[in-house]
Amino acid sequence: MKTKLVAAQIGCGKFAWQQDLHNLSTRSDVTLKWVCDVDPGSARAAAGHFHVPEKTTDFMEIVNDPEVDFIKIATSHEAHLPIIEAAARAGKHIFCEKPMAMYDEEGWKIIRAVRRGGVKLCVDLNRRMSPAMQALRQRWLAHAASPKHHPWRYIEKVRELLPEENLPHLLIRIQDESSSYGLGHLNPLTGGGEIIGESVHWLDLACWFFAPQLPCEITAWGSSRLSHGIHLRFDRGACMTLDFSCSGTFDFPKELYEVTDNAALFRSLCFVENDYYGVPGLDREFFPLQEDPFPEMGDGEEAYMRKYRAHVENSTNSKLLERTRPMILDKGHLNMLDGFIRAVREDLPSPCDELAGFRATYLAQRAIESLELKRTLSVPVEKITPCIL
Image 1 (cartoon, helix red, strand yellow):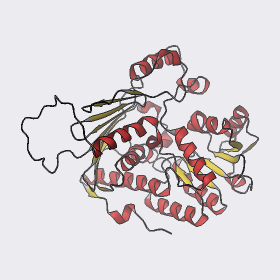
Image 2 (tube, rainbow, N blue to C red; image 1 turned 180 degrees about the vertical axis):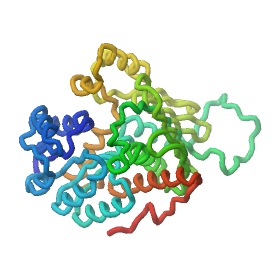
Image 3 (cartoon, rainbow, N blue to C red; image 1 turned 60 degrees about the horizontal axis):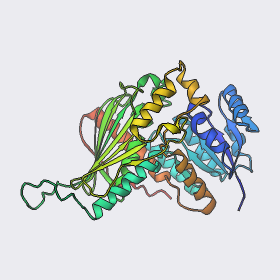
């Protein structure tokens, strides 16, 4: 087994600087040999800042390098398919930003390419790997398997439960500030809007959270480009409701998760704090930031808000601040990278494979169709479990 895997970064934009380039260049088990970007200035800047020896504007130089073991893709969405197909033919493992594909047919071609090439593919739908979400799911599963309640729980009259009672529900509230969206993110040719560009995160999270249940019905409303809502129902009764607003503020945490089931509430606040209600013996849990310039200020949501204010109060350029003194929530990026590298080195299943990536794309496109038609649509099992060899 090689002591170090050789990696290449394709796409050197804002996200790559905040996550990929830093994470790959600081690992002891990875050598970051290449950076690639269609903008030569971006490739040159990334190579210089992260001390990467090779730079290019042509991803085929990387594909044709026999030393490269895997690539990380952080390009605009429409470029994923040709890069993945070329890398898979060359036997390179692939770590790809979300969404894996913009359309179903692209997703099917990606599944075919990586399976023919015999390579690992991981899609960075990272929420499923965040420590807070992992803990939330474990606590919920334990309660679902053996419910326990406080002795003072109020029950008006003992009766047999109705069929729809105590079916688990996951509520996801996203409040975002759309001034941060580049037009490429909203362009139908390169980004596709917020359902395909962002809400694939939460569609994937719901599928992971309620597995082995499979989604069977979807309803969406609003705008596929910006603010919207999605209700996703699963074949054994679980459901997820997503409320995504782009007219919010960065002055408050973006993401809130709440699971209700069997007279209990499991709540996660912006990846730093989980609170549990209705279950005896479960205490509040705190989770550290991925990058924390103020560790002395404590843990949890209230401490995070104090840290955030201290972080930005004297800044006039938040983009520059993200590069020079980052403060980053742990949304699962490091765990996903760890899982992918372990899968490559030990021939294990990918932590978020090509089928999961395809399923998120399919559900996002089905949601767009639902809001355009203004009606609920089925999610046929043959669509989300394609038999592509």
